[in-house]
Length: 374
Image (tube, rainbow, N blue to C red; front, side, top):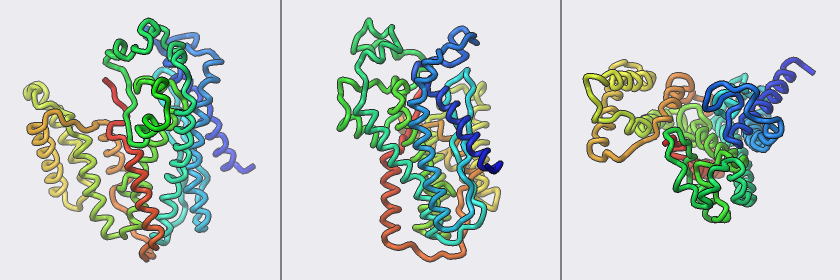
């Protein structure tokens, strides 16, 4: 066995372990080494409970592996030199996470056509989407009885099936957002009597893994830069048209993300630095979009002004501020533009139809506010 293959296997096994630990933490609602009174020893979870995290680990890693091997096998089909997936484990034990930062493959040579970019880009999300459908189908058709949630939260038993009206008032309660596909499964597939609250989805391994699969599928299908969605739209539109549209879509993404971040009622003398920090953020993310500094400044000022105007006219409208972090990564790390390929030949009609299908998948999977902390 070569060293490189051994590294890939080692990273996968470590990620299997960390996602199992993370899955157990979510399933039983307790961090391994941390509780209400601080650091805990011995750990809060038994080995039997850790083993219970395997359901989440298995489900989510099947999705992640299908996504990455969709890219890998398609690249190999086109004889593009590419590495096996590198899995990225991460687990702290004192806070909740999912045990991984994902996985990636390294493409080690240039891709030569729009068709290759399109095919390699679309293969991962479509493969992962199929797995997500299976996870959600299984999760919603195999919901446990109400007694299951009482085994995790015995304090809910006193309120019976009406516990939702009494328990979700803490400022750190985490709820899972909704998307069209999740809503369809809830309303067309699941038994309404067994449906968990959106605050309890994390205790249901297949539902939680399925939701995360939809979230990461949509994230990758954002039609911006060199994300999978960017590769797909670039293949459909070509270099010049795509690189005119991508910064527009990125600007709309940042505009939505920042809505409601800062209240117009804050004290300008005490909280001026918050506005200054956000203005600096906007300059930071929009600067790479233009060769001239002043155009980035103008766009940042325009977006900030538009967000303030929306707050004045529709004060109840809010975006999802968590997207601002990903917006920074897009602008400063991944890039908003797509490089050209030597062969700019247009795609076939069949691939254009497939591209529109990928857009439909994005719409079905996208959650405007995926994780909600009350």
